[in-house]
Image (cartoon, rainbow, N blue to C red):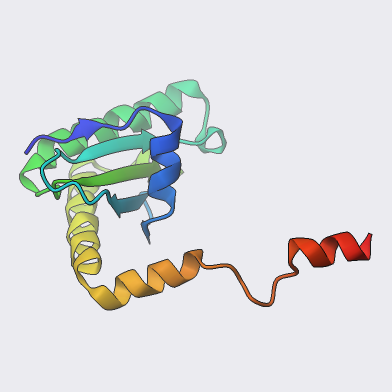
Length: 141
């Protein structure tokens, strides 16, 4: 199934709460939308600290092409993916980008299927019991 595109900010923010896999070329974020009949969607992000607009657009183009070429790697239906480029993407050989993307997707799918990993990712989003609460902040002021 050919992946669609993530375009709206709320969709990108929702994916941030899912699984995150770091690598030297990019960060892959993924989340299950629980809509197995829908096509997968993918979004691309390059922060300003990675370079000027010419360099950021080049990184984004390279990522889009890597996804197009590695579409044989199955994107899971009903899932959203965000690829956040790193500076090393500019000088990396293109085949290395494709291999890294395929490997990161395989790892992502393995972790999303493992219930223990999903529980750990959910625990990361729970509030910290040791953090000061909003009511105690007001009492300190």
